[in-house]
Structures are given as C-alpha cells and as structure tokens.
Length: 203
Ligand SMILES: CC(C)(COP(=O)(O)OP(=O)(O)OC[C@H]1O[C@@H](n2cnc3c(N)ncnc32)[C@H](O)[C@@H]1OP(=O)(O)O)[C@@H](O)C(=O)NCCC(=O)NCCS
Image 1 (tube, rainbow, N blue to C red):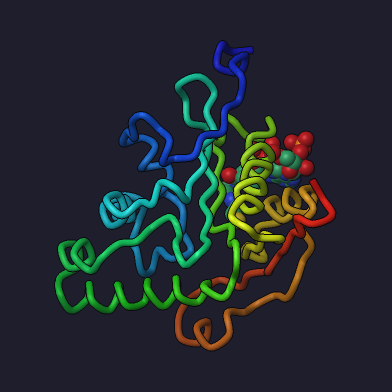
Image 2: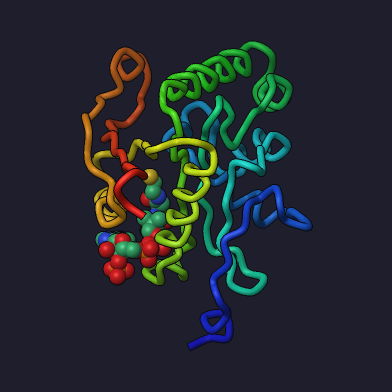
C-alpha cells in the first residue's frame, strides 16, 4: 500500500480551496468529452474554460495533496463553467468561435429544467474502486439538501455501464432514455439515460 493510500479521503468544495493549481483546473476541464465537437480536445477545453470555472459548483476529492477526482453540479441556473464569447473567438476566430459558443450555450441551456443536476463526475484511473466516487456523491447529496432540493438528477451515456452501475448502487433509478430529441437530430450528441435519486427517504 502506498503512503497516499494511507491518507484519509477529504472532500473539499472548490471555493474553499486556499489555492487552485493548474493540475486541478486541468482535471476539471477534462470532462465534457461528449461535447468535443464543440469544445475541442482536452487541451482546447482547458484553454476555453479555465478562466470561467465556478468553484462553488465543484467538489474535489483529495488524499493528502493529491487530487483524485471531482464532481461538478448545477443548480439555481449556475453550473461549473460560465465562459464568455472571448475565449471562443480567440481559439476559433469570430465566425467559427461564434457558432461553437452558441452551440455550447444551447447544450448548457438544455439542462436548465433540472433542479439540482449532477453535471460531471470523474476519478483518476489509479484511484478507482476505492470509494472515491461514492464519497463525492455522498457530499453532493449533502450539498443538494443544503441548497433546498429533494432530489438529484443526471444524464449518463447509455454505453457507460460502469457509471450506471455506480449510480444504481448509490440509490439512483433510471428514467427515460433520450436520443437527444431535436438537438440530437442536428448534432452528434450521444444517447443518454436520465437518472434520479430522491433525497427524501434515503440518507
Ligand atoms: C465511474 C467512476 C466515477 C467510478 O469511480 P470510483 O471511484 O471507481 O467508484 P467507487 O470506488 O466509489 O465505486 C463504487 C461502486 O460502483 C460500482 N462501480 C464503479 N466503477 C465500476 C466499473 N468500472 N464497473 C462496474 N461497477 C463499477 C461498483 O459497484 C463499485 O464498488 P466496488 O469498487 O466495490 O466494485 C470512474 O470509473 C470514472 O471516473 N470513470 C470515467 C468517467 C465517468 O464515466 N464518469 C461518469 C460520467 S456520468
């Protein structure tokens, strides 16, 4: 067992961090790979989003100084990222940047009808199967209750069986499968399954 594995797991709200280093920002902006056709590859997503992270919408799991994973969520019309047009224009030029920015806003807007929405969850490969995601979800449920919600909702890609397994174990139930309605007919969004977890009867 490594020394890191012996350290207790800590779950920290991003806005409470004394300092936010580049590695954490890279971890957080690495998500949203399903929007790669809008936001580009991992390096590009970092450049577009790094200055627009809403740290109060992100929980980070640490053992000692090592960040092992994060969960991002959206509520009260505020998610983990609020980029302006500027970074898109700088990256892609005015016209192509404008189109991509518009598509990003549409993709984000599509989720506004959810109350407390689990936007992203990721654990680094060497730290998987050690309960890190479970600990992040437990703290997410606490954040949702504190924000006045009685359920948490999410969308997960139909093909992502391992994440669905985790969510079911954590009390989520499957809802409808969305081949992405009208948006999916226009753009290459993957099919997703909607899942929800009540906070009323479960701890
Ligand atoms: C899905 C993910 C977040 C799970 O993180 P984790 O820290 O390994 O999860 P936990 O250790 O808390 O797992 C708890 C339980 O969930 C289930 N589970 C987790 N990963 C699983 C997998 N790959 N296959 C099957 N079941 C899995 C298991 O029942 C597991 O218990 P076990 O480890 O005793 O078998 C991680 O694999 C990941 O980051 N994947 C890539 C990103 C992703 O798919 N995110 C979800 C997008 S919606």
